[in-house]
Length: 113
Image 1 (tube, rainbow, N blue to C red):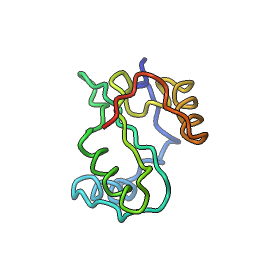
Image 2: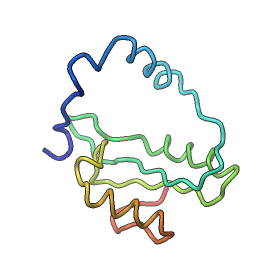
Image 3: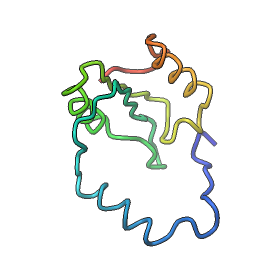
Image 4: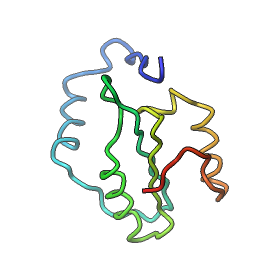
């Protein structure tokens, strides 16, 4: 169902301890330090009643941080993809990764941020 049918991991893999590790990063907005690798950042743009889209301003901010050591870092938004879009459209995900690794343009449908 459009990438929103993802099942949980093994029973018991979603623990309170794991949640305590993840949530502070999300709610405190601790941004990463700049990193040296050329990076493609993709924000999923499809939302609706299921809160499955990313925030383009966050992707743009990550791009700014990543460009400090590597100006080839870019960010895009895809309005028809949900998070996690690798499950919604695995072929598009693979094609996008291949294009990025080979230094080609990403497939159509992406909007540069």
